[in-house]
Image (cartoon, rainbow over all chains, first blue to last red; front, top):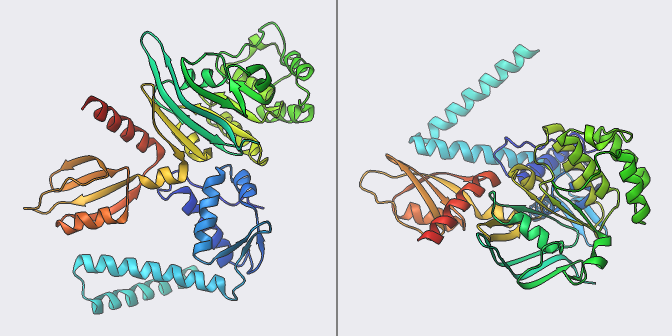
Length: 133
Length: 298
């Protein structure tokens, strides 16, 4: 069930962060539905062959972000918010936009120019998608 | 019941050319501790003391609630110990060793032993003298794992193994953690193994414990800051920075007590923080040994 969790040692991000990302991915694509129970910390640690404390950290951070809920003695669940997957995708977009804004500011690029560049990027993506079809 | 699998407090041992000084460490039950340090740092001596094989000059050692070395006979039923120099009889086959263990330890799990034989690719009828180094290590681990002890103490269990064999061993060790009551303490040079499977990390150098804490907290404290120092700006000395390497306008600062305020403090003095990177245990290991040696020598 968890075989497709692949943690990378060449990935510069900490292991707990990679676990968070992969759980969110599962929710975003709909494999893990809202309200669905997820493996216990210990179970996931054994399956991923990583320390319990790393998975614990990932679950703790996910709980703080409101992505999962842990009930004492009952285990953890994906938070039962309709549209959680879509909300996570929205957050991902937000992060990328902020990152782009930050780099643009470092380059001294005016916001208007950044908006134009984004439009151009959108055109390029649409073009590439057409090529694929 | 005591919730600590291993507890050392104020343990010392003096040899002619080496002193183990004031060792404190705690391993809670249900956790894995990775014990790391350079060659000759005192890892094996510490392990021998906690096994009751070497008697400390001072300090308290408790293993699964038993005082060591006084209660080592009682403690050893529940401890599985494997090290490089574990005695296996060359003229006997692996299955002879397996029956021998089975005859002594009531918890011996014969079906798990068969599974391990297959997973480790070992032949039970083969005599030990024909085993390669890697096969010998795996055989020794099989013999302790199949006893299902409450505590596994492993001295360098992955040293000299190929990547596939290492992976098999790590898989068995993390598998042990499915049982909340069982614990593992292992020493290693391989920081990647320690980083992957440990809940607790203990760092030893030159007979002293440098750090001992849970892995997530530990990794979280260390950061590398890539800095740009504009002309006319001085790079300020800041608390929590243990090393700075500078080349022209670029500098890399290493922190062992990172908080976001540290980056703000640089920015405040006009230094630009280009990026803040987390560090691997390997990088921390090197930085930490260098830093602690500088401190000792200063």
